Image (cartoon, rainbow, N blue to C red; front, side):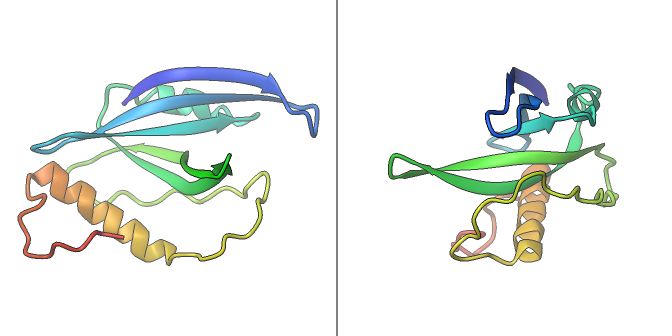
Length: 141
């Protein structure tokens, strides 16, 4: 995991200061892939917690959302948990924090548990080098 970018500002709506950092995570495998995600930091010190794990193999928990801008949709990955990965053990998931701000309800809501399970299975396949060896050619989502 690498730290990419950090931005700060003041909310126009509330007047509170905010800080956000972008991290890059490499998913190992025969063909490694990368995941870029953001970490928001209010008074929690969450960015410092993620910085402690730079260069280590980690399990990251994040929420996936999409935002529309000029008729196009862009994915946003917001991380809320990070633990050091222990081979052969499933790390317990950290408790989700209450969202600071609620956006409009999405039109369709996928089953979050199924999506999380599929992403976990994909990461395990990539780490073990078994990625793409199955007969199933369906997308994982």
